[in-house]
Length: 214
Image (cartoon, rainbow, N blue to C red; front, top):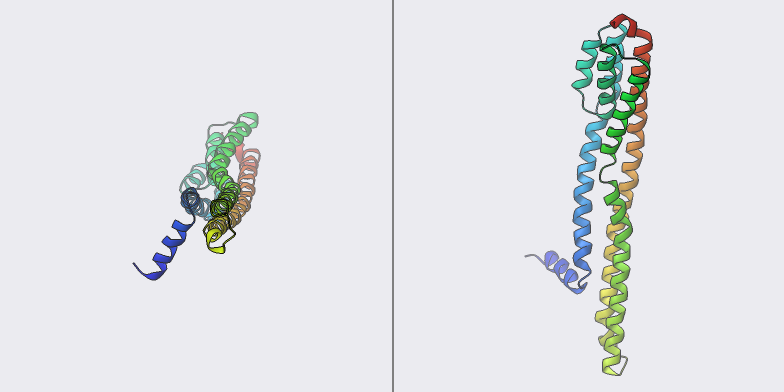
């Protein structure tokens, strides 16, 4: 074990019991953020390309080919295109088509937002855990003074160290998690816009080229 690992373990040990839930929060947040990055990158990949390809096939009346293109490209906008185009191919228009698009959009939005509640909770709770550790550390420091009957820096140093370590750890967890949360929200807003474009494409295809597919 090198000196840096020993130093980290020493800091963890000196931070007291509150370090355990803080480390657990950091591990959960890291796992969720890695999963969200992968999910959103896949969802955003080649969305503009699939929209243009689907529109090109629809203009030629090739709804089946347009469906195949949308199925081959994962993502929320592609999912809306698949559902809408299949409805159009079966002759559905109007309210039935709109309801199918809205339902698919709601499902896809729920999938995109999965895990955000966990990140928001950790971003809010981690600093509070750190402050709780601060309170515990100060209690330890004053209890040491009370037991000794004298104000000795060596007596209160341990409690103050616990207070500072837990506060710093809570903030170190909350800051990147909060940044990641805001990044994911911005990315999801972008994907929602793409979903709306996809829905509009489907409606345009239904109204413009739907009669050619009946």
